[in-house]
Amino acid sequence: MDTKNIAIARVIKANGGEYRQLELREYTLSEFLRVIGQAGETAQWSKIISSVSGWPDQAVDQLGARDLEEAKAFLQGFSRQAQDFGAWSEEPRTVHLDAAVQFGGTDYAALDLREYTVGEKRRAETHSGEHKQWAQVIAAVSGWPLPAVEKLPITKYWEARWYLEGFTLAGRATGES
Image (cartoon, rainbow, N blue to C red; front, side, top):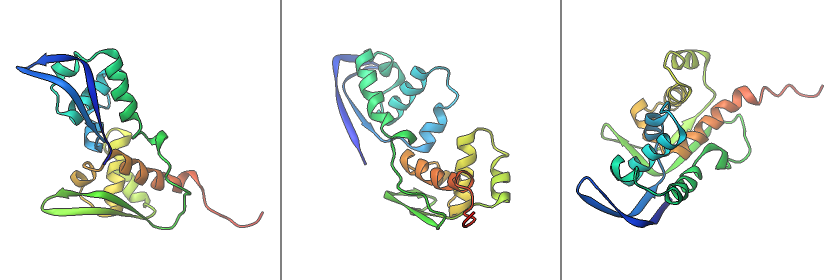
């Protein structure tokens, strides 16, 4: 898993502690879902930074603008736009995790994906928010429980979603015309 340490320009004091270095890691789908809908980009990124670094919100609020931008640049590297998932194919796809997700005493190390059904998509659409809906589809298709899907590293969520969305974006091959 990619990590980054950022030496902060000045010592930050908050909640009785001192903070000198920001240690960042890739965020999970669950951490992403918690910030969706927060007002403002800075609020969203500061919540993700707090979650992945373990810093309290009060310490993150004291970061300088340049430290925030450096942290954001690293974390944005996990965004969908920054990923290259290779060529899309309608063949079933396995998304391998670098480290297994644990839930309910079970380790989940790979998502086995296939084309979703209308019923799976309809059931997912009863939940609010597109990311929550796609998490439901991933759970239905892979057989993983939803709480395990929500523990996915965000890049693995994007890869699974990219594959599943491909069925509607790619259309169906119809042969020569």
